[in-house]
Length: 400
Image 1 (cartoon, one colour):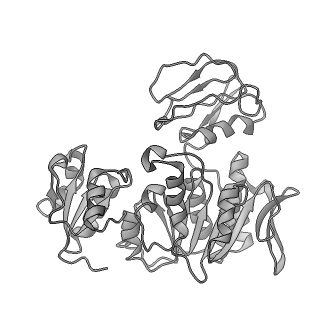
Image 2: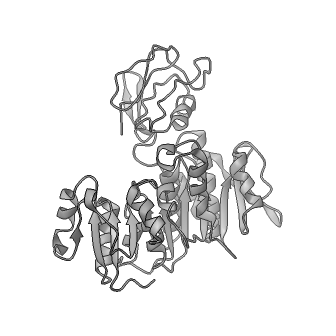
Image 3: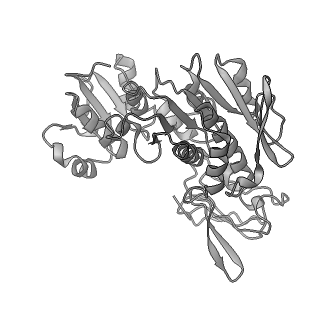
């Protein structure tokens, strides 16, 4: 991709925006930065290249001399600057798309409403335990653009968590292994509709060809239906259904089946992280790393040592017979509903985040797997509004 001498508008000067600005400046591009929230933090982060970055007031920003627009992930597609760029035919690329054009290593990309960080981290750990040089980043940790100039390159594999925000503005992004864990109603305030949200997620498969692999959730009918539309090898994972080409939960084992070989099975007991959803996460990770050449022995050893990711059902301790778990990343309704039923005794769940314009609803009080405690339901981040319904006690203002 030829960038020399171009002027690129970066919208948003957070972690991703500053990384993109540095990358472009080092390639003789004039970065033009604007941010609706102001520049103070970004200017501090970019202080060492002051004088080589142009800052424009957001309210007065125009695209008259701009060759390329790169929005930060949090900038919604209906943003006026993005809409103007589309109308004027100015290329709009996400940081993910830009980075992928400069990377030659095979990419394992993971997306989904829930589980992305857990699966991305686990895949990275299995690959590293297998002796592979691996970069793990994207939507977690280091932005993918930071991999390009990483002093440890070349890598054997790049593992990237990717969000619908990043996939929204991709054109040529092509992961060697693409994982879609699940799709539930989320971020409709950003994408405008559930259909648009799903469409963005499915862009992860758009450019796969040849020997690439698509991994799908076999328990979600709409996701599994992608098998008929994708032109690459596909494998599904399921905890409910037998898979003839993929991974199933069978008799206390995770069994990877294929038409041309005998089943390859893993003990369910190797999984230390709680929750049936984490069985799905482990299945997806196994299918991905097997494609990358990791052995069954290395997989079992890595999964057996994996204790999860911070803020995702992380056991904190026990006081006076009460067990405490940190699940402050549980900011999506379906994810929160799954938690109480994963334990052997009644638990209180304290999900976090904002309602994203939807508000939150109390799960069915008659459902003992989701409502274990009586009490009040609190909704909305930072809100003190009570519904007065009985059946569960949730506090949505407990996290971000």
